[in-house]
Image 1 (tube, rainbow over the protein chains, first blue to last red):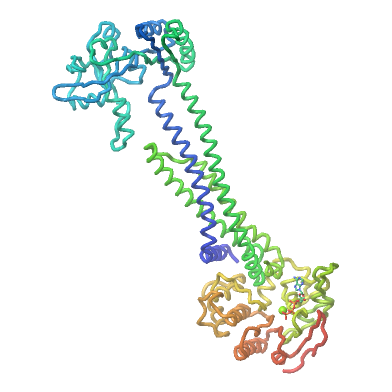
Image 2 (image 1 turned 90 degrees about the vertical axis):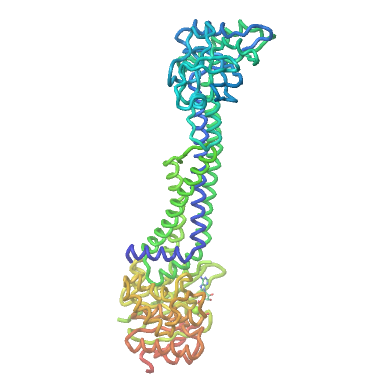
Length: 402
Length: 231
Ligand SMILES: Nc1ncnc2c1ncn2[C@@H]1O[C@H](COP(=O)(O)OP(=O)(O)OP(=O)(O)O)[C@@H](O)[C@H]1O
Ligand SMILES: [Mg+2]
């Protein structure tokens, strides 16, 4: 009997035992798809978190410092950081206030007004798209200048050039000197994306020293951002800043806190490691359950198949023909199941990635193939197991199988 | 040289245990090519056991079996498969059809293993089904057929490849006397065209159509009408 004949026989057997075929495939499909989806979810979560930190920029140090009744430490901190030299790239207050921003008839009702130093852009990962950044002198001399975020500029000026134009911020006139590059280009339609775009790009940055002009809003300077030069510099700067703040702030009359985004990324990595382990474990169990399903259905049909093999042998089938037939049969079932599992896993991953993070997540190829290979090998082993065993028996013994 | 030559064959189940069964207890038997032999005996006397050994479906516990001069116990698994496929058409007492295959597919099976392909195979299978009067049931699977119809599919399967030896274990057991008579006609036709036919039955009137009747009791031959009798 040739291989083509064995193939035809295998296909016939697959087609005429639909329940067995479907159940076996189901075990493989569930196992493969589950592994792909679960592991992809961890991957998606990790990259969405990393993307967030990347936007924030690496080597970012956040400082919280406040003293009741005392003057804020903005300028002391600025001078101290200047003294740190190459260790830090910039320092800025991270104070925020609300208020109406107007240009002629155009209005931004809910603009985020930030009060920063001339290093606000460096510290918060903005780059200048048009015009210039604020300068040391702007800050020192209380210049009423501002830099607009990309969305704020678009909303106020449409396509006109904002540079040099006068706008009013909380009733006070300011001159626009620059526009930032968009940090979260809006793709439209996605709520989270829109929110991010509004939060980070619908902004107006003014020198923090101008806070006194905005008398109608209460502004607290207690939050600062320091940008360090490198990850080693970050660690060193965190230590130095902490000891500097301990000399400035009496813990009984105020508080301070210094931590770096690097530390948070570390913590995040730890979290994803845990998550990977837990979900990986669940995926492993899914694969195992799928595998047991395959074994089960194959072993349940062993008696029936042993008899069939007895009949085939009695009619003159050689051991080799029988094993080849069963090998093809279980190979085809397992392979088709594996392919469907991969397609299903891919589909679910893509849909979930879109729904949860608006990201296009592709499951790892090696992992998907690994899970599929595992199921296929299992399917084949348990598919040819009865064949290998029964084809070695005397036909009468195989026919007597209970 | 006899076609079938069996010397001191024993088939002992659970040997040495309390439940020991001597299904065959020292059988000596030779059958010539072209004979039409009936084996009779009561239930449990060892008829099927003997036939299974003769059909190369089982091996004796002790003893020798020469088929067309070659020692069956010396043959390899694939040589035995070849003999089962080409030399012997076996009709089982319990039909042994493959449940998932249609009547014609079951009949085609031995031809598949013989390497007969395509329309030739289909033609031979249809011819065999027509001989047992089942051309109308080609596409039915065994569970959609009566016991007698399944029996006839099993007969068609045994004769489709036109083997030299036909071994039939109670082929009329599930048939009414008319259909049973048709089956006996088929066996006689095959015998006349040169086949060696071995038939198990417990019905003396059916055994009467054979040239030779061997009677078994408790795994031993108790009588043998001898070769060349009748016809
Ligand atoms: N696998 C086995 N294990 C133990 N005993 C067996 C086995 N197979 C058959 N026997 C015994 O061997 C004896 C002969 O059985 P066999 O099937 O040859 O009888 P038979 O003459 O064909 O009977 P029937 O007319 O009922 O078909 C019986 O007593 C049976 O119980
Ligand atoms: Mg019997």
